[in-house]
Image 1: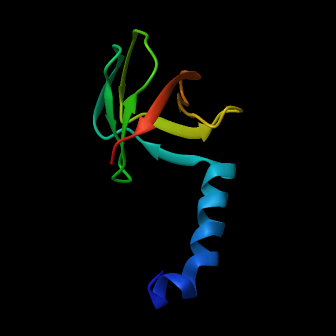
Image 2: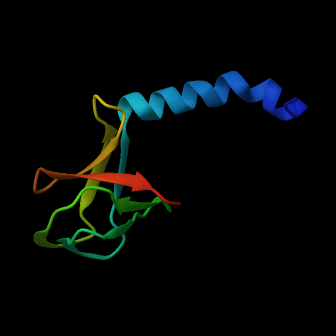
Length: 94
């Protein structure tokens, strides 16, 4: 069974999860960005860490570029580099 705290806040947590999935996540890549190479790990300023889940190679140099993460129609996360309007499939690892 759920702890009392979780039972009390279950609806709030569910609503927040639904909001994030609908609205996506906006943050910045922490530090210098050089694109992706097939196994790239992306550390974001919001503390999250994502890993490239689709193959591909793309070179782009930027300092702390803004990113937007959204679920696609199949329910997989995509990360878009806003300034370049380029996206790659990712999965959260932390």
